Length: 231
Image (cartoon, rainbow, N blue to C red; front, side, top):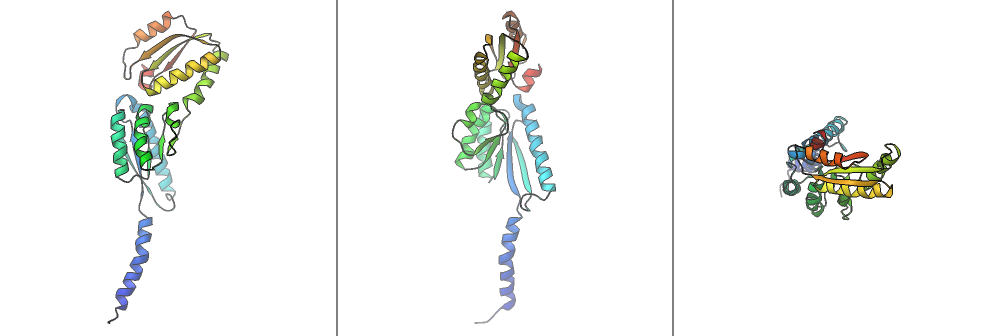
């Protein structure tokens, strides 16, 4: 059998080079964020925060020498789209998924990342997100069950209100917040005298404001998305 020392040396070197090259492959992270629709403000802020973190981590040398490759996808503030994009992220081999931010979207999309055992970070606040026993979902914000008792105590002790009108957005985020603040206010002895639901993306709030005014409430608690709150 004829010996090929150069070929053997080349194969030997290649065997050690391939793993080294593989270690340098970027770490794929996918963002499922609300870049349009009613959640554009929250989604864009979340997306920009992730991009800033990725930039800083990569500038510092990455993770164990590997850079992060971040790609964001627009859920359009739609739970159905979010679920489909979560499956797409799984198919593309995402190592981590960031978002969605909207509670209604993460509640349906996290089933896909759970099935693939991929860590999924969300800014959603609905208590139900972390009450389903999903070990792969991580929240980056206060839960409503944690925040609302503090808000209710502030309304009673600082605002000195004995009655409150609640205006809330009729989605998973709004319903969860409305339920939690109602319970927390009751525990503080503060009466809810008006319970006023509004629609996601609603433009005219004159009717809701009129109902709140007519209720005679000492204080108004508004729990809607950023765009609606600004209106």
